[in-house]
Image (tube, rainbow, N blue to C red; front, side, top):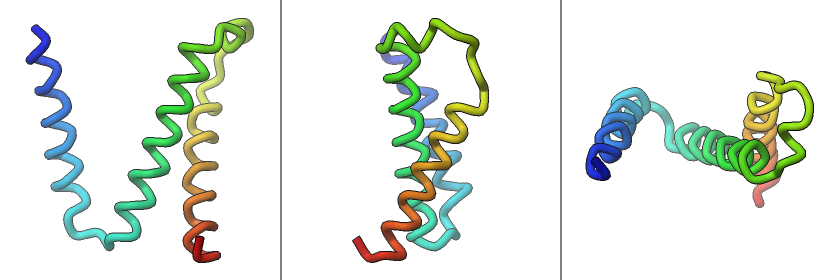
Length: 81
């Protein structure tokens, strides 16, 4: 059963590669970093912080958080950090 967890990961990696193989390198890097950072931060906030479950859940929160990571990545590339 534990080996079956590899199937979605490999499938997702294959689909991601096929979708982004013609994209410029900077777009791939920035989109990957933004999505990964937003998802990991959302997981930490939603699952590890008990106060996050105290109020109503918004669907826009994780999207805005991921968008913020993307904006930060674009600004850091523009500035040259």
